Length: 544
Image (cartoon, rainbow, N blue to C red; front, side):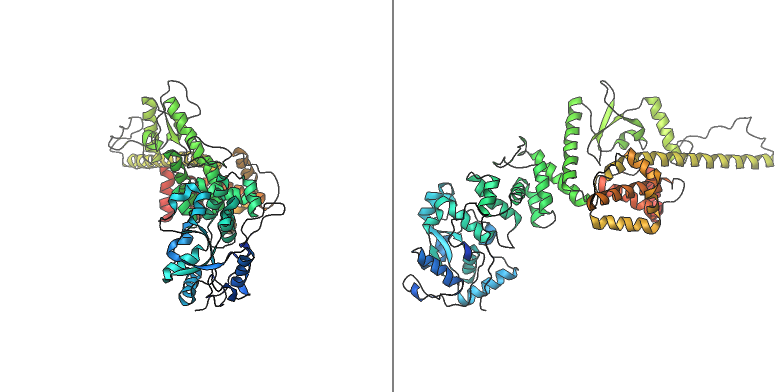
């Protein structure tokens, strides 16, 4: 199968910046060449064609007094700074398969660029141990061609030998010219390349000028090197967008301090920081949170746990286990020295919620409240109180017994309705705390559109323009200034959440509809809301 030419223009430095030392840069960016016979060696280089990539690179080599020679593939070591993936076979990649088939049929057609081992070690002594002892040359560019030659069983490849390329870190420039224009070069591989320039003392601005890229791109790529291995895999797999990953790494850095970091965290190499990044990743993937908001949430939890440890406050996973379903009634704003309190991490904001343990008498009252919320008037297993003589008719009075039965039934119904109303009010108070967090996490435009369309079709959207929604948003401090699409979408999201909450609250004595269920499920998914017992019964009934 004949090889085809794939040429991408290498990125060049911006005007006024340092020009790359790679004299062959204009021929970089492609692994294949035209179907030109390339059988010449050091002895017959004059027979080379003067057209195509091979002719061009041969002409440059001739101008520089270099020759294209045949070099044993086994004697060439990959450059230790180059992305390792480009030195290995890539089965399943159509471009790799095309290159490999061409090399099998015709050999390597476009020369690689190598430097003698001695010259490389002299320029980069710290990398000497990474070079195979059997290698006579170190590859500067052409790593995929070398890998294809090995896979195809070829003994030699055409090469330009140029030890001068090592001057002024020219090998880095050569690899940059070859790799930066490639569509298959990962963001993490670019980050490693930029980091090499940082290690030789260049600032982010100097790196950008030298390679002809934006400084913002350099900054974002370098930030990826502050990711834990779990997050790097998520970036490579496409589960975590590179821009989001860079924002997260900037706020929650992990790994050894880097020269280019503007601010360094003294604990960024700790297992705790790695665990925080993994926690943030889960929030992003499971709840759809944005990186900036996720970092704020994780840092808030870090500070909350430190505060609890300083004050000696025990943290529990679920305060309802300790205090019952009505635990929110035990919430306190501040810690008072000597008070018997417990803490819990707010699932939405990550802040520290404090709960005062009730006195024994209060605990009994709370238990009675739980019985009422459950629709009963006395604890299970306890005998019913004896009726008083003033309210109990004679047992022989059949009409009286019937009347008494009706009265008892009416009282039971009234008690149950009061209990349900109280349970609904308590659930509403708890929901609204989480709604204030939910509005800070605007979904994607596509998801927002689905929510708005659903509310429009059901009629919930009609509440959005009411004064009640405006009042709720004031309570949540949901003010958004400015203009533009992003601001409009944020305001629409705020009003959609407030409208859904008001709609759900009005169903306190009715079965929940799809809109109420969707609202609570959104709170559960995005901010970790835990429904009350009454809400769970509503959800179960709606799903029956």
